[in-house]
Structures are given as C-alpha cells and as structure tokens.
Length: 246
Image (cartoon, rainbow, N blue to C red; front, side, top):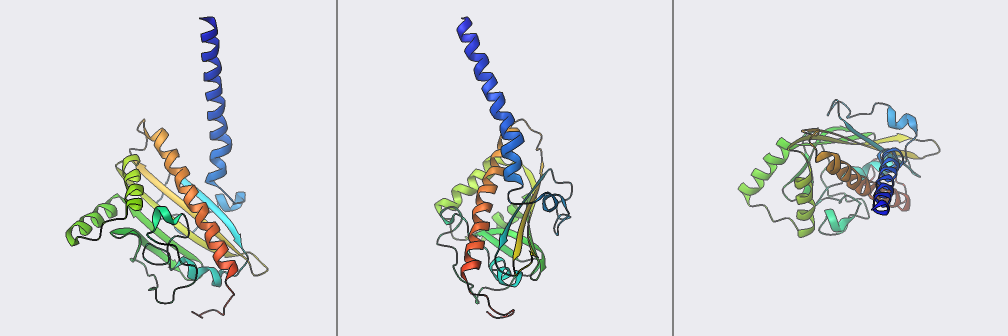
C-alpha cells in the first residue's frame, strides 16, 4: 500500500512538473513564436477589432525581400483563391499557389476571404503593402451557414468538414476573433511579417475551456507557423519585380 501511495505521489508530481513546464515554457514559446519582446507587446493594426481579448498571440518571421514582394501573396490568400500556404490537406482541396495569380480579385473591406466553399473571414482593414486584418465571429459563421444551406453550396471536402467539426465541438458558444497580417521594412530590403491572432470567448470561463482553448490555440499555432514558413519560402524563391508588376 505504501508503494502505491509513493507511486501515486510520484505521478502527481510528474504531472505537476509537466504542467508547469508547459505553462511557463512551451505556451509562451508558441504564443510569441519568432517575435522580439517589443513586437509581441506593442499595438498593431487590427487590435481594436476585438478589444479586451484574453487571447492575444503574435508571431513573426523575417523574409529576405521587401514588403512590396510579400504583399501580393497575402492578398491572394483564401480557399479557392491562392490557398493558405499551410497544411493543404487540412484546409484546401488542392495545393496552395506557388506563384502570384493575377486573375484573383483584389481584396477590399467587407469582402470574404474564404476558408471553405460556404464562408470565411471578413476583411476589416486593407492598407496596401502594410496591413491586412480579417475577422470572424459567431454571428458571421451562422449567417454564412444559413446562406450556404439556402443556396445549396457544394459540400465541404471531408478534410475541411472534419476541421470545421473540431472547431465547432471545442469552441464556446459565442466568440469573436481577428487575424492581422502586418508587413514592416526590416532594412537591407528585408521584411518582418507579423501575424497577430486575437480572440474573445463568451463563456470562456467554463470548466472545459481550460483544456479545449489551449488545444485550439496550439492548433492555430501549428497552422500559422507552417503558413509563415510557406510564405517566406515562396517569396524568397520568386524573383523580385517592380512595384505594380503582376
């Protein structure tokens, strides 16, 4: 019996140590991946779209090209457009674009950047060459779902449907989220690509959210990290062109 109690104490201690390591080491790493302290802390365009957001994750990467070479890759993003440059098996039917597609319509405030055939993020801000801010909330998701049913939009591929089911099963009932893509000159013809994801969950203090929200947050990080690396790789292997050239 004493050995069992000792074993239980060891296991509890190991879980506590692992939990502390995750909270104080791993979690900050993926929340602020690639950033310096100033980038993670300072205000960025789009912060006002979801004010007082408990989730405020910032990631950054340096690209060996000027912002004018990166911007076209951002504004062609989306399902059925240029893709998301991430794990295409999860969020695309085919592969993300490997070149700039001049026939893809430009983005304006109010447009939808699709994540699937029936909807996606709403564009909240477009500052050419500098900032693209996307937004989604519960009301927008519901409106898009109702419109998709009314127009009999094509069914989601199984991979995208599965990802959507996961989000629906784990998120609280009401939510609002912004996703900002910021380009800043970094000297020597380079660019800092900064992405900030902010989210607020009504009902986020429910017991299950202590486990589901970190799980969702890490999933977002995995996709975003792959996306940023994908953008960097595409931009750096594409010859630079003068501003305004397709």
